[in-house]
Image (cartoon, rainbow, N blue to C red; front, side, top):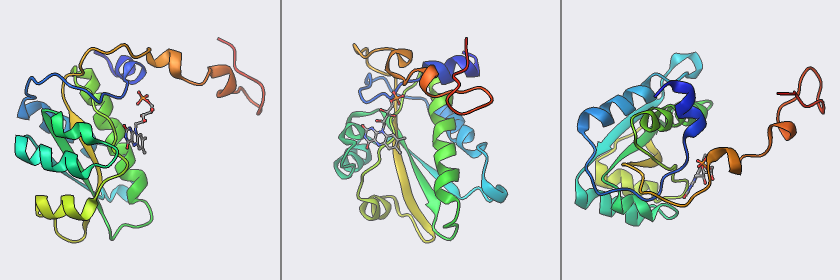
Length: 172
Ligand SMILES: Cc1cc2nc3c(=O)[nH]c(=O)nc-3n(C[C@H](O)[C@H](O)[C@H](O)COP(=O)(O)O)c2cc1C
């Protein structure tokens, strides 16, 4: 799948087939994260690939708005460098988007988890300073769902994209 199709077609996946995800695919996804833009190229991120079922269960229990992590076949925990307070959140967010799009191009889905018990997750994974949990991303083949297509649920282009001046929607 080409990059644009992945970007335009991706939707959040919260339910997954039980089929395992190959380690090589997860490494590729982490590589996509590593290739994100970052302020001053400081790359304030670190990625932990998790495939052990017991660990995934433990992480899911600590993902307050992402219990679905427990049932995913794999996850990547994204860490941010606490010493890079100015831009780390922006940089890590870009890494996450890269990873989501790359995964989609490989037939895999994910969903950002925004609320979690970061210190407990860090303790389970042996994370040391200055690293802190930025988010937990489950990865797996998305279970078939009745969800609408991404185009149907987006705010219309006419309300979000202007040409030359604010309030002059672009045509086409
Ligand atoms: C910063 C951020 C935090 C999010 N947190 C959660 C979350 O905690 N739980 C969840 O189910 N989805 C979460 N999402 C997923 C969004 O709900 C989802 O991306 C959004 O509804 C758009 O849908 P799409 O990803 O299919 O385009 C989060 C997304 C972002 C960008």
